[in-house]
Image (cartoon, rainbow, N blue to C red):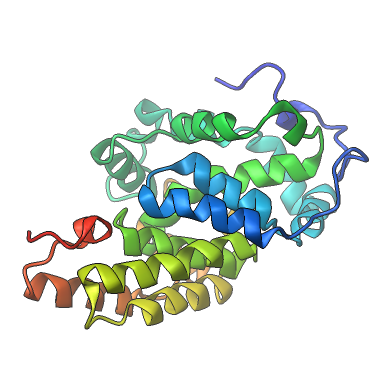
Length: 269
């Protein structure tokens, strides 16, 4: 259900609220928040705080495109609140077998996730003064709400390296230094925590390149993509193969290391 007061329902939103402060990079604050991420990669609120300290400077330009481009204006009108679409698994399951909709439901149910759950994590971080009634806010929400779709489309898992690669991929699409500030240090932590001998940092860089070289997911109609086969969506968006990420997993499993435990010290599978 769409919140009754959600900004996405308002057609008269300004692109950029006069109350919104100019983007300011605060690396020391980001470093402090990254320490929380390093302790717990699932601390989503800490991730959001890193992004707040190292904001996406191109946000205003992207919001402007949603205000002026006819195709993007239509997408905004049809998809004002993505969690309502993505959490309606009953509706998604009626779409064709093998579709992105089914793959997304499988992923979210297997991982015990929901789009609304990510919203709630964001609300723990987003104090009222940090929210603004403008199209930039709505655009930021859309980047948040498509995060798990990126996992499904890229094939990056929810292991530490997979999350780092998704962040790097996102940087390739919407360059916020916060993505790289988390991704590469996580890679170094993996290497020092038992993941040596695998091309970890190169895999993260590959994710960054893949994101840069394909269409931007937030500027595509999710409703149009969901009924299509995953392979068709990947081809339509131009998403390349995650060769080095898969190679890392192969190397670790050959050494009886479970990739999903590496941030916890590389326990044996």
